[in-house]
Amino acid sequence: MTDLQPVAFGVPAEAIAAELDALGITHVVCVPDSFQRTLIARWQSGNGPRFVGVCTEDEGMGVNAGLYMGGQNPMMCIQNNGIFASINTLKAIALDAKVPTFIMVGQFQRDVNKTIEEQSSRAVRMLEPTLDAWGVPHWRIEGPDDIGALKAAYERAWADQGPAVAIIGAPTL
Amino acid sequence: MERQEAIDILAEGRGGAISVPTMQSVFPWHEAGQGDILNVDASQCMGSAATIGLGLALAQPSRKVMVLDGDGSLLMQLGSLVTVVASGVNNLYHFVFANGLNQSTGNQPLPGQGAFDWVALAKASGYKNALKISEAEDLLEQLPGIWELEGPVLIELTIAREDGPARWAGVPMAKQVASVRRQLAAT
Image (cartoon, rainbow over all chains, first blue to last red; front, side):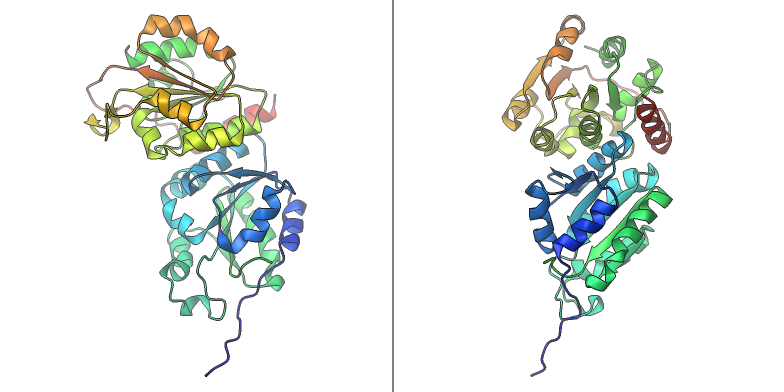
């Protein structure tokens, strides 16, 4: 029997929170995600940006846009299935209406012992091809060494005036 | 009442509220001269007017935000009622133009039309106030008082069926998003 070795590693919530604080994030618009559970718990406790819980990712795109117009610096936190669920508003609001939309997307049901391409979950495998189909830039965060991808995705969202995604490949610690 | 009657009364009584119209309220709202100042149309994202308004209400708590929603639109993101309440905003005024039809696609009846109640749905979701207005003269009389109510407030406006082709203002949402952000930053 082969010993399974992780290929993706969790990033401490504190480290991610520090990165987001440095970016001046004011609001986190969130549909819960198991891979970002520790981070969400931190926000929900009142630590950091204002937490805005929404029922669906479509709602989240709208709230994010309103906050942006109102002069705030919001972001979204969702899971992979949420991208599939919100293509219409991703298209109309983030892309067509040119709203900077920085999104952290958890790879729900990803097996951290396998690469993305080896996953049995269609949701995990199809996230990046779906984003590519819509021209949405994305970065993988497969471990602590990739934390700089948060800033890269955020800056791209503002430079493009559109969506950019940081993909969380392992549960945050 | 006719949609145009309601639009004209709301335009006259808007004050300085930020507006977010959607679907078949967009064109007459622009025709009434309300399209250029602190206005963003929820275009090509049916159902999103309430949450766009919610984001603005959260960002600008000292301003009133008016959403000109449709009944078919709101049904598409019905959970928004709960999301609005959960956010804690008190400056959102949610006008729902209710004709029981998906007018933009040819006046098809809404699912469950007649079996649900917007005022009850809003109150059950936790809206601070909810009321139904069916006559133009009642809207004219009650509007000043509505602005004094603590939000979120849902106002169901019963409007008559309109036939004829759907009308669109055709203003790119991107242009409006940038404009609203600029206008709010300047005040």
